[in-house]
Every structure is written in C-alpha cells, then in structure tokens.
Image (cartoon, rainbow, N blue to C red; front, side):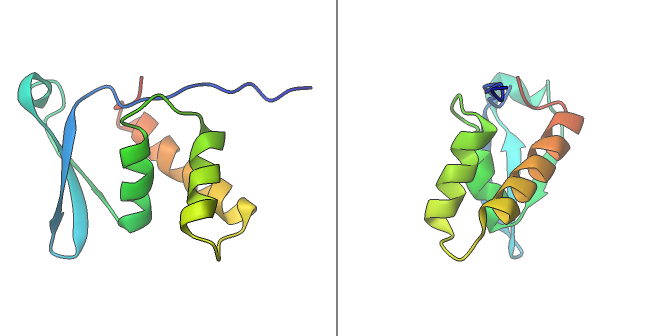
Length: 95
C-alpha cells in the first residue's frame, strides 16, 4: 500500500505582510475579486503557505518543516500540515 502523493498549490496569487504580530495573506491583482478577504496565520503557517505557492505534496511540506524546525517531531509536523492544509481547503484557496 503506497500513500498517494497528491500535489497541492494555492489557487490565487497572494502577498503576505506582517500586521500586529500576525502574518496576513491577501489576494492580489485579478484574484482579489475571486478571493475577497484575508488569511491570518502564525510563522509556521506562513512557512507552509509560502511553500504552497509552488506545486507540493504534504510530504514535501513535512520534510521542509522538519529541516526548518529541528526540534519538531515528524508527527507534530504532519499534524500541523494536515490541520493548516485542511483550513485552506475549507477556505477554497487550494487547487
């Protein structure tokens, strides 16, 4: 049984800015009319979000998180990615 590696990517073009100790992503250009709102996240969320600007799998993101946050366990990284990606899916911003 091989786990299927499904690629994901953000549907829209976003810029991220730091506002009052939070990182906020806002759609830009033509995508502003398609996604009217913003996404608020912490530093780990921003790390994952920026990876999703390219075509990646959850495994790719988990590996990158483990390199960036050396004190995290694989289980913690996987749970964080799964939860964050789930929220982005609910917001309908992933392809």
